[in-house]
Image (cartoon, rainbow, N blue to C red):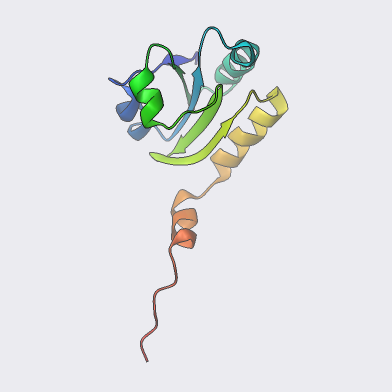
Amino acid sequence: MATTDLSAANFEATITSNDIVLVDFWASWCGPCRMFAPIYEKASLANADIVFGKVDTEAEQSLSAAAQITSIPTLMAFKGGTLVFSQPGALPAAALDQVIAAVRDLDVEAALTEQQPDQPRSA
């Protein structure tokens, strides 16, 4: 599957209606973004079960602000509609493959449960 352009109009629906979504926040003037683009595109073709979205931070400034993007490229990963990974910087192919494998293996429900503080125990 090739990459999908995401905008404020389709971002939330894309995140919530697909199991795994990776999002690349980028801009055309950004050198590291241009270096990362072919790596990201190749991974999208190799992982047809994952949605690979791209957000042009220049065209989608309000969406980028809402996502608190302060550096590009930034890669975000969502699983089951939950943000599970966010990191600025262009990743080499092997690191992107590791992120994809980790997101696939992640049990979001268990991770969310672990983040909950222990409930007080009654005597």
